[in-house]
Amino acid sequence: MTAALVIIPARLAATRLPRKPLADICGKPMIVRVLEQAQNADIGPVAVACDDNNVADVVRDHGGQAVMTRSDHISGSDRIQEAVDLVDPDGNYDVILNLQGDVPLIAPKAIRAAFAPLSIPEVSIGTIMTDITASKFRDDPSFVKAVTTPNGQGQHRALYFTRATAPTGDGPLYQHIGIYAYRRASLAKFVQLEPSPLELREKLEQLRALEAGMRIDVSIIDSAPMDVNTPEDLERARAAYQTS
Image (cartoon, rainbow, N blue to C red; front, side, top):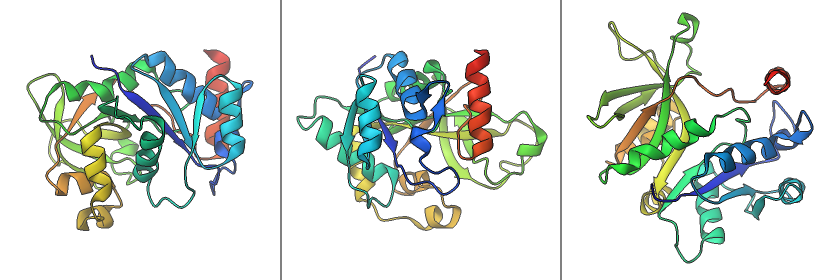
């Protein structure tokens, strides 16, 4: 397995949970918890891309690498691209993994699973999904559905992503989890593309890649990592760390 450069974007501004990256989870800021899980995945060096010195300071205080990026990026992918150019200007890493900074409970094996589809040369972007087992979430538009077909090599090829309940008929529904492993050239291509019609309609950035003909393949993981967006989420994350 070729090493990847892992970038964790972290913005201090958050409407539902102010100063989210710095929220304490059992003695450590949330961004540090995510950093540690990324380091435990052991797929390559990890850097936090931030836009505030407070976040950079806590990352460095805990022995991590932080890089300051602009505060006016339209998308997380743009922040990732800037961070990659700053951290690895010589292009030593051909694979970039984008790990969100609000998943303190993500398992290292789930991070590695996003990286796995890139073993197929034709794949531009790897990501992950999990089976939706609770019926109440099947029609929830906040649970993004991945419409896929098996690729014959242990993962699935993405045909579409949607907030609708799809596909219809009998069979599993898969929740997409927004962790992406890009080939470096694919990330550079992606950030140069204009937002696409389906992306704007569904409000799903990954559709821009599909509409441009880029191949996205998906690994299945056992369960979805809980993301932290509200004070209630934060309390659940704290409880999970206390019992782990």
